[in-house]
Amino acid sequence: MHELWSEFVRLFASSEFYVSLPFWGAVTIAVLLYRFTARLGGFRDCLLLACSACLLLTLPRFNLTTLGLLFGVCGVTYAIARLLLNSAHLTTPRARQFSVAIGISLNVVVLAFFKYRFFHDFILNRSAAGFRGSDFVFLIGISYTAFRAMHFLIEAYRRSVQNPSFLNFLNYMLFFPSFISGPIHRYNHFCENSAAARACSFRADALPGIQRIVLGFFKKTVLAVLVSPYTLKNLGVPLQEMPIWLILIGLYAFALFLYFDFSGYTDLAVGTARLMGFVLPENFNRPFLKPNIQQLWANFHMSLTSWLTDYIYWPLSKKLRSIDYFRKNPILLSNCAIIVTFLVCGIWHGDTMIFVLWGLYHGLGLSVLNIYQKWKRKMRNPVMRRYFTSKPSYAVGVIGTFTFYSIGLICFILSTAEMKLLVSQLASDLVVAFATLI
Image 1: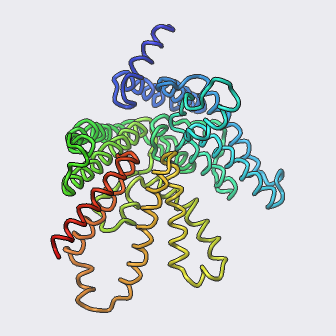
Image 2 (image 1 turned 90 degrees about the horizontal axis):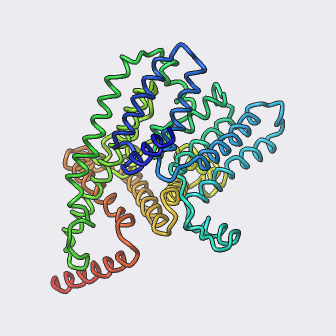
């Protein structure tokens, strides 16, 4: 039996999560067991947790120790949330604030330790002689797990969590279709949109689930593969020899590759969850057909955007509104909150300064858009107002927005040295062009 399990793990780990036959074989078994034990109530919830745990254990370098650690973090998070929900234990606002701060801090520390190399290098290099922190395994899915846990704590603090049983919470945290790359679903939504809550049969969920899985496979294995050779890193031309138009094509292709691959993964996750009887939130809604960067972000990685909006942007805006200067300057208030929110977004994506710059890039872009939108609302020229609602204006907006987003992806593609080379090359090209004009 041990040999069979080891072989399964080896086969599954050798391929990308969600694109391996052993995985889909295991999913088929899990779906059949889960959906056809509907009348067994609590046993079915235990079965879902067991299925999630087994499938997570097949991930590369994911073992019983990491699973045990996750259970431990979930246990502490849930215990704090129960205290926050029970008014008899925490009777003062300060005690409640302290408790939720402890819970959030715990999850931030766990996220930092397993995601940010400099953090566990700092700790482990001083606590274990001869052991480098950079050799420590990153915990797959920790970014999404931490955000789900923090959401649960904040909603418990607000006393808006419904049906908070420990088993439901564990299933919410470890639900295997969304564990690695989301969507970042919310606890109440997860419970309310289960098959039991919707009183929905497997027959009703099977067709939409299979359709989403097929669409996801098509995006990942056809569209992403077709676009991949044209991405900036795969063009086969040295960066210093590329003209600007070729660099743009490489960036556009990478943006499309990223979209097809990530939205394809989301389709697979949503489809698999639907087969299990759960409706996950949507994550993409044609983002590259939006006429400005605000609408793009409202429709790209939507679950992350909504999480950042609810738990970073609005609380920060509320705090700033209590300051007279910001209250009298609402655009400045909004822009400060936007920049901070996207700095958090950048840090969440990675542990180097490049990701901070990427977050700042989008935060500043949205701030400029905010100022432009205010100017546009004040515009009274009838010709300009007709233009703003015209198809050419929409087309210009879509192209400009897609270009702005694609240029930002340089941070994900090029090293720091390559970025410096590119900037110097572009500066040189601009000088030559200017000299030609004069």
